[in-house]
Image (tube, rainbow, N blue to C red; front, side, top):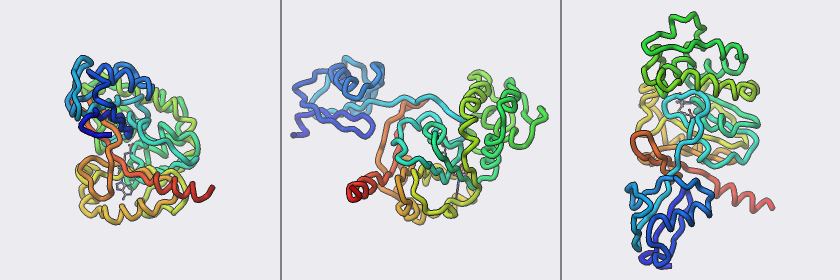
Length: 306
Ligand SMILES: C[S@@+](CC[C@H](N)C(=O)[O-])C[C@H]1O[C@@H](n2cnc3c(N)ncnc32)[C@H](O)[C@@H]1O
């Protein structure tokens, strides 16, 4: 099909080329695409990268992209967390999910209904997960619901409770936080996080939690969700560690994982051939999520096995 006479339509990893003579405006494409992919009617669209409405005419050579909205949030909101977008990543192919750079483990919170292994180098993150693994419902229900300006250190909490509450009083922060922000109070963040954790507490109990460098994990077949500090933008986690982070070594390690491998990054990264997986409807502007996955290698192996 000649590209000049078609309109390209993108949704996530799907690319369709529609003969331009068959469509006149975005609405024509929207109704066809919503039906094929069972998309919600109101899903936002971009015409050649710019927001557009249904009546916008389309011409040969135009690119129309449908943008995904963030999904239901799960777990606690750490900087760089995949809490509300995990459902847009490929589904796990294995019962065992391993997150070597776990953070708040958005992927496992969404898909982790089998065996889950979370690892993180950061002892604070490890302590929060250990706490969640053994906490009972009453522990979570008892956590105080602060007003803006209040300090979690004034509430007679244990250290892991203070660490966990830090993400609730100042969502998406990179390190320890103590004071409740206006935004957290207004958005009822603490109540929301408590509800979400109560919902997942039972399955977290069986998860394996370790604290160490990603290279200490064994070569076992699993769904590997590898979400390291971003090559460009990851220095917030621990600037000292970040400087010495060897992405070439990490790339080789990712390629050597047995099983299904999904590596997350942003558009600036070049240590693996990352591809855009989705355009997300952000709070301030749209942005793209990138992944590298060995799914092709996995499929080849599967075909050889049958
Ligand atoms: C982008 S965050 C992970 C976000 C996570 N996917 C989520 O949904 O919240 C990266 C994590 O890697 C951890 N980290 C940094 N260097 C590490 C290393 N060498 N080994 C293991 N974890 C590391 C950081 O502490 C941070 O929690």
